[in-house]
Length: 263
Image 1 (spheres, one colour):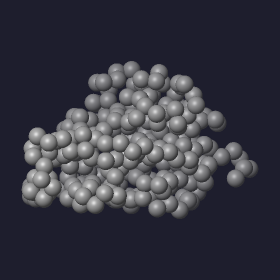
Image 2 (cartoon, one colour):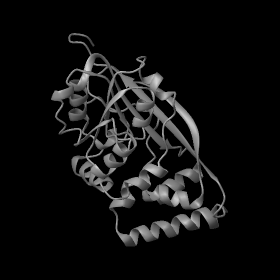
Image 3 (cartoon, helix red, strand yellow):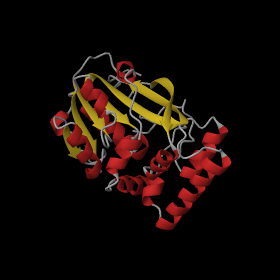
Image 4 (cartoon, one colour):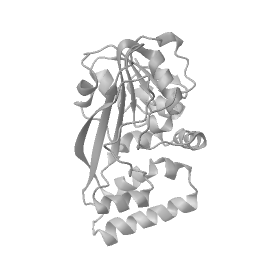
């Protein structure tokens, strides 16, 4: 089944594999400590159910899993990076963790049982057609498929330049829906604007949690740190102790399985 057209970011198979492997490192704890969590209002937007079975695809260290567990959901967390799932399991020992890519996940144990299948900050790492097939296999008839992602708000010129220095990739149109196949209804979206408050060192750490940084050479990493330090201190005029308000937009999209014969 083909995918609908979308302007959201997609990657080819080789790029997905490279970037997925980049996250399976001993830097998972840094990732968990510096990457932002999610607004409590997102989950009620995604589904009217108060709890049930949720499959968290590309769960990473569990930043969205936190919301699901707090709301009383039974969670199965799937990610190809064992280091990241180790952090998740330490924080949520009752969550079932599965080390697997989404595309290769054995869905047998949860087939047609999930009330919610959610992919937070990971859908662009997943093959669209295979990922949608897996989500449809997992979902109960009335279940919800959801895609959530943070993006640094690059509508501000200084932030756009910052993202380019960090090679963060936060430059796709936030209003565009995720690419999905015709197995699902048209995505319905909602957005949240907010700020992450970081000092200069923490912005360096945020850069260090990015896939480009994790897979590049030590020489290029040193150059990135030098450029970032110059930009924040010399060009923008911050001091090491200043709090920098980094603007974000979070987009959440919900959709459902199409019933046979309906369009």
